[in-house]
Image (cartoon, rainbow, N blue to C red; front, side, top):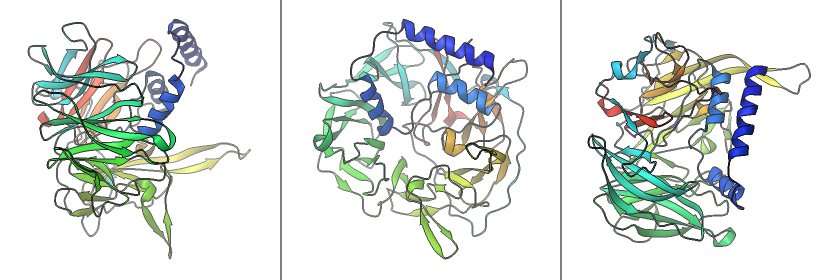
Length: 450
């Protein structure tokens, strides 16, 4: 980072800190709990500013949030194909490349309240939330993108004893589900709540112990008349995937899902902390090895609907990979140690993309770092990167279509302090990608990209 940019960033943050209201007494505790509970979350402006400086035009992989049915992965090929150099198109403004998929909308409701997009309920209706305070959701609404009108779906209860407020809103089977946590230590519990999208009050479906780590829920899914979730423990989801009926009832563990966590309905996967890899005659089990060489995130998938499994075959198994439903993203780099043995740097870095079934392998330009910056493509197909269409003076968020090699520039540029604000989404099956402007959102309906 240059001295000039460092000074500018320092002055901007100092000024913002001076103008900010005094924090509530338990703010740091709340932030720490949410950080542990939600490993995949929005990247703040300051962090994004550093990503722009550190990664340059490199590929940035992110995750995406609650949503619709994902495509079925095909069975893995016996031998994966080669990794060839990717041939990519020049960046094109998204509204020109995908005119039916892109629209910009205000970030405020007709009554002036600011809202946050969650997912598309259909082609023209957006599920949105409003907040009563810092990360304290108080309402869920259906927002009509054509008429700019909104309809209340449900009030979101905010229990006074909450230590983690309503999180991870997920849609399926005509319902929206979320979770919150209250109590601490041995008394900490997680509650799963749902509400019908047609309107009606929120119902608390089930209460379960939060566990020793109090890590919260890693991800929710709704389908087949049930709500599913995994606990985000530090040691990994050892118990497996929990399930409870939407109509109400006790929570049970889905047989055969030990060590799995939810990706998107109906798929679960094996996180890298529980992935095993052969080295010679021994077996190494990675418990917290994200970013280590030869780790494979979500190598094995399981279908919650029919119980079938899929396992990825990779052309470069010595790289670190993160596999989605269809696409896997990989990286490799040599580690170079400085003379003082106190610092290291990555050299000869490469990034890869390959379908789970072993086809379509290619080497991507830049250092994607799917384990460092995020992990899965949007809608199981689109990779967020930094790029700029011709005539635009600086790089900003763009989407690389892994199927076609086309790049859609979202038209967002850094603020005066050099920062970019990215809104990540947590479910790789979600059809909606959101980029944030100062007073509006750029919405990309990825289901409408041909």
